[in-house]
Every structure is written in C-alpha cells, then in structure tokens.
Image 1 (spheres, rainbow, N blue to C red):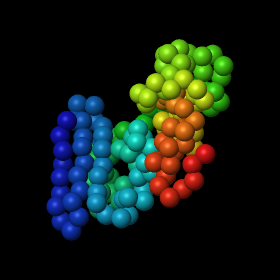
Image 2 (image 1 turned 120 degrees about the vertical axis):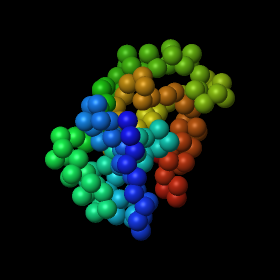
Image 3 (image 1 turned 90 degrees about the vertical axis):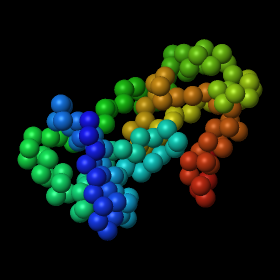
Length: 150
C-alpha cells in the first residue's frame, strides 16, 4: 500500500493498493470534497467512502482508473431493516440484559444501531448495542448536535 500526496493550494492524498489495483482512500481539505464524501453518521460510521472525487483529485483518480485501478466500494451491510424478536433476544443475551455503555442499568433497555438505517445500517450483532432509553437518546443527541433526539 502506498500514499500519493500532493501539496498545492489544498493538502490532499490518495491511498492505493498496487497489488489489488485498488484506490482505498481519498482525502482533500477542500469544501467541495467535504460535501461529496458520505456524511459521518455517529461515532462508528466509516467516512472513507465517497460519492465522487473533488476537482483536485479527479485527474489523478481518472489516471489511475486508466491504468486499471478501481475505487474501493463499501461492503454492503448484512442484516434486517427491522428488529426481529430473535435478533433482539440475541443482542440482549450478549449484553447480559444490561446497558452496554457500562452503567449496569437493567431497565428500559433499547437496541441502538451504530450506523443509522438512513445511512444503510442494518440490525446485526456488529452494528447494534443495547442501551437504556436515556443513554439511547443521549447517543442520538451526540450524533446530531443541535438536533432533537428520539
């Protein structure tokens, strides 16, 4: 894996895997790129993926694609879009029927998706955690400052 970095008006770089011919990560400090990459949703969201490279990165990405490289695509998350009873039971058993934030509360437990459904998050063991209602609301308030929590 190597990093191709450029320093002109903006600092930007590409990370590529030459063996697999993959463009793994793009990063640019320009505002155009900030709006093009997938918005960060929560503390666990992966912000390495992007919809379209910015005007600074596009010529380099196009040149790499002509050489046979491909842009890395995020793996599609596997799981259900609705919380099923067996999945809830499995998550609760994993958490020993306690809040997974570490407080040890056992009342008003809810399942929280780390990556929201609107961002492609599914109900599976890797993407879910058990929280009390209050901690669940706080998690959403922290993810969306200034916004209303559930």
